[in-house]
Length: 311
Image (tube, rainbow, N blue to C red):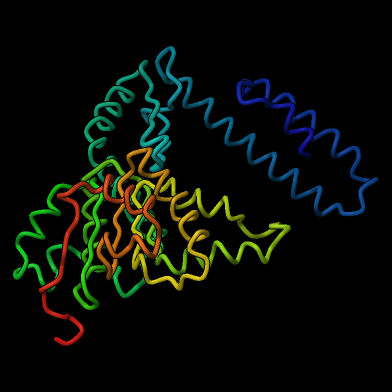
């Protein structure tokens, strides 16, 4: 059956298709005695007969339409995709009034489709970001220390820039980073977001050494590319990793942070340590790249704010 249907390309006229299908019915009926499953043949024949009936009704409608009209009075054929590659596409029939009306309706709905597409894109990026459930709903406006730190909130008003948030434990660094990431996703052209705890990221890099074939697992190169190429990357708790081989740690972090620095890609980093203190943990090369990425205005010290874990 598949071979037979392939003989009918999309451009085949209904009349030509009907001739081929009627011939097919005759061939199948003649061959039915050689088939063990005659009920299956009967079902296929019934399906073909229904398609011929639909074609006949279509021919009757088409006979009433203006010359050049192909829409059968629908105005056009809509195909909607909410992916970034194809936001909204709709072909309208220019040969009839129905098509002209449908084109006007499509143009009126286009802004709504764009909004819906962007919201779906944001939701998908947020869902796939790796943000832990505990922090999924963190927003800048609900950050507990917002009233106590207007200078911090002012620093975060400019989106799509790299930031380094540091301070003692419990100051809300992770929630603040997630809230800022939401604003970047909502207010800029950023389409992908990755959140990762730095010790977990380094552990994942090490784990790739346990899977030499990588048949069903990513390679270390794959993981580095995942974080290095994300539209926005949140590196949480830099400096909390247990350092046994500082050279190895520095090299892996440099491959992620250095590439993002070179490509001017926004990165948000949280740490309990200052940049100066991080030199001994992750190396001078990494710290220099971070400092250049964020600039002096992008280093935000949360020391002095209340410990939210004690409130």
